[in-house]
Length: 147
Length: 147
DNA sequence: GTTCCTGCAAAAGCTTTGCAGAAGA
DNA sequence: TCTTCTGCAAAGCTTTTGCAGGAAC
Image (cartoon, rainbow over all chains, first blue to last red; front, side):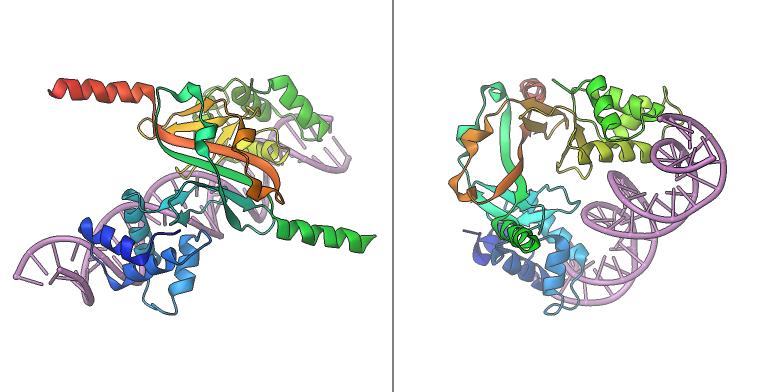
């Protein structure tokens, strides 16, 4: 499960970061979010409800959260950061066709390797790419129509 | 092992991409490279030997190679693309202190998950972050001096 | 009242694009 | 000769920074 709004708020309070109206809205959105939004997506989702909201504030808030390790920043190959409030260990699958990012369970300990014995590992990321089932079935449909 | 200069050249010829002086130099550099350079690093490494070289040409060449799947583009959290000519399956470890990227062997099949049964997986990336042994020993040295 | 935050505008950094001249085949 | 490539300059993106007014505490 994602961190709840309450959890995120409490963590900010604990770190003396002010709970402004804008920040609470960003936290609320992120904690209810199942995909992994970019700053632009968060901005577009909230700008009706919070018309004065600026991207600067979203960056500001997300950077604080990431620094406190309350959220994760996903490095994908589109040059845009995706944010993830789901902090349990999981992998990401990105569909090359529709761009959607899926979560999947993974046991990263089974991936471990003796070569990194002397390394201090703080973060493990697993990122797969390919075509998701939805897009695969669309492609198959087009192919069958062509025959 | 990295792809050799000859392999990369032949692949380009096969795809009717011209082997210009600049491209050969970029290929040569990449095939002899053990770290995972950015465009900027390649540019700085080659600008003495090839003074007229421009970053545009490096981007051009690397984008062709990536499209032909002869090299890989690594998504890291610094907003800069890293390029990798090592095409065998391996993971990457990035040191948060010195920024260096290390390769490590990994058996990705052991990481597989039943939830992705219906997904077509084209690419698997494993990316760890933390502190490398070199930086760890530096930190320990500083700590022991402080006592 | 003090401190920190917001949001605008501008700047910074990476990457792509347009195009005239140059080089490859 | 014909096609493609190079490299400059400019534009396009995301993200960061500076700062005056405003909100939180």
